[in-house]
Amino acid sequence: MTDAAKPLVHVEHVMGTVVSFDVRLADETARAPMRAAVADAVSWLHRVDDVFSTYQPDSQVSRLGRGELRLADCDDDVAEVLELCAQVGRESAGYFSSTFGGNLDPTGLVKGWAIQRASELLSSAGSTHHLVNGGGDIQAVGGNAPGMPWQIGIAHPLQRGALASVVQLTDGAVATSGTAERGTHVLDPFTGQPAVALASVTVVGLDLIRSDAYATAAIAMGDRAREWVEGLGGYEGFAVAADGRGWWTSGYPRVGSIPAT
Amino acid sequence: MGRFVSVLVATVTGLVVLLSFKTAPAKAPHPVALAGLVPGVASALPESSAPVSSAAASSAPASSAPASSAPVSSVPVSSAPATVAPSTAPATKSSVPTAKASPTPTKSTAKPTPKPTVTPKPTPKPSSTTKTVTGSAVTVGEGRRVFGVVQVRLTLTNGKITSVSAVQAPDADPHSAQISQFSIPILGQEVLSAQGASINAVSGATYTSNAYAQSVQAALDAAKA
Image 1 (spheres, each protein chain N blue to C red):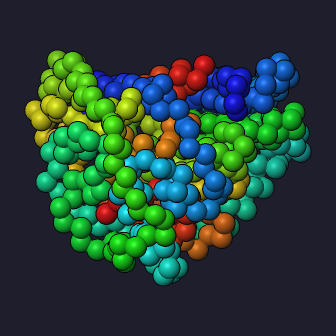
Image 2: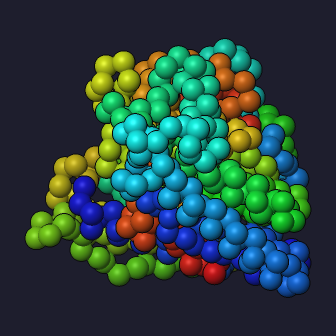
């Protein structure tokens, strides 16, 4: 990135949140094709929203949930996401669930899946250095320049605008879940009660689909999450409990900063 | 905490991030990829930020050695004053305060030996110019409730932010006064500088479209665009 082109930055309101694209360009000739690739990725995200939104009563997922549509009549993506939900549900001993309040709601997985796919679309179009941030869940590719990892701040859950850690990542995903996301609490599926022990959990891994879903499952687990996240191969975690104390997995210091004391 | 406070904090942080973008272009190449964050950072930083880097570097192996037990930060509620960014001391030079706001390090990652893997050369810059900028005081509140006044002081050394501290912080509301006493410290700008880092993005619990406008990510996007 010597005389480099300015990054291609795009911000899109979609899926009830904001998705930020940061595409690093080798030179100006890459701008037009990458702009087209970002446009494709944005179209894809809107299509995901139309299919999966639980806020849109006529989305496929809403109709599927009401029994008005069979799974076989939905896009193949729906079956794929529901299968992923089932897998993560098993991997998390049931703490990750694709229902909310008794209704079909794969929202907890869809966003991570969609952002990861959007990143893959950019890679397919030739991008070697980009980052996609969907409402705080990030898929990063190639560092921000050759040999330069992305610097990803972890929001401090107890003070908005402040950071609690910084993750350095060349290729991979960072996902953070919190006690209260978008106004709705994460529920412990076994008690039905809001999970309140942890203010936020960040999971770092290679793929955003599982990093994001695991972070959500960890919130639901509460006090049991630490041991579970520690046992996840290929994923590291950093958490801030509701009382402000923190914990992190033994491998987390290799990817993220920890408090100095 | 009121929304207004959050806005302010976000704005202040955003400003800081923006400034750091302008003043501290990530110059030191980071030789590390996924692994070896801290040592890589330390070695990539020829400047005077060795204390924090080396402390972190020495604690990293300590914490990862007993692979079974993840360390817990058990810094108790400390006597930190209510600050927006709890870099307590009025740091006027560029060397970085290691332990912030925690006079009682109970356990956690006990520093083994002061012999980090990386050369801990403090090398104080011979001709460093330090400048302190104090922002204007801003009243913080929500609706008609006024929590207090916030005023932020930045210290710049050779044009790079080395410290952020609150000159005044709201204390009218006990809740807002408590917030900086939580155990996971809020990273001050000196830590960010020690990372040689301009933050590229922020991971956090899902924000709504409205919350995005007040987020650090928004400030980052604006700075890059």
